[in-house]
Amino acid sequence: MPKNHLKGRGAQQRIHNRFFELRHEVRDDFLNFCHTEGEQADKNKTRYIEVFPKTFVNKVDSSDVGMGYSANPYQGCEHGCVYCYARNTHEYWGYGAGLDFERNILVKKNAPELLEQKLRSRSWKPNTIVFSGNTDCYQPIERKLEITRKCMEVMLKWKHPTGIITKNALILRDLDILQEMAKLNIIAVNISITSLSEETRRLLEPRTASIKKRLKVVEVLSRNDIPVRVMMAPIIPSLNSHEIIPMVKKVSELGAKDIAYTIVRLNGQIGEIFKDWAHKAIPDKAERILNQIAECHGGKLNDSRFGIRMRGQGIIATQVKDTMEIAKKRFFKGIKMNPLDRSHYLHLKDPQTKLF
Image (cartoon, rainbow, N blue to C red; front, side, top):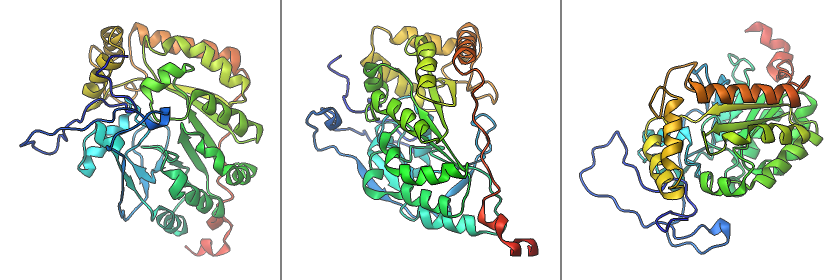
């Protein structure tokens, strides 16, 4: 590991906010070590800042992400995944997409109340709401605040179709709620597993749950009849692209109902963050990986065209697509995720709804 690599963080530098003109130099006192790896950390700790949004459920207009509505109890994410597309959204809150995204976590303590208001609305239709459409709803601070758990209690109360995306084993804490939701077929869980290599995980996703724990989540949820899809997202050429078949085989054996993938795209500020990380964390592979990412996106690190940006184009992208299809045909033959049931939603059971 190069000496200039910042342990315990994905981003290796603070990136200026594009919406603000910098008139002075900004310096960071970097973490020396990551306490989650059992090493001493310096004074530069994560900050948790309470915010007071007026709404909580967001409509998603993108046709590429497979969700109509999302809900995010937290903005920013301490997991520190260096490739995370959500980093750019932190700029709208006045922070940078680099270390600020990992160190300044905005907390929505009023999320359960706002969610209840939305589900009480007579005009609301039971469209699936996906938690973590932007940042992980089970990131470390959730253990203390339990905002996501309270939101899940609201979703169960209203018998509303729910999706979850996470890479944290903390989701098993809420197994009791998920089991009740599964009986009504109103829950689907997406577990993000980028690699089967713990070494790769530590570099790419420094504060996430270990690969062993995430695989355990797939096994436990499946054993409890809670439908699980594994997200191998993103696939990064020459870094984890060789793991497609072993990954598909492994998660199918653990009971997953499906597996999906995306090709990495370094949109907005992520390109600069990822390049800096690559040259510090994996200097011997950096240029090869960056060149192959660009090959998937017409010579650039990012392609924003809908319908193409998540899958890429060219020889490498085609190889990834074909390999995934072959693996799924072999290990997921006859297995599929069933659509969630909307009919249990309380308003649909209320006779007075007809008056509206």
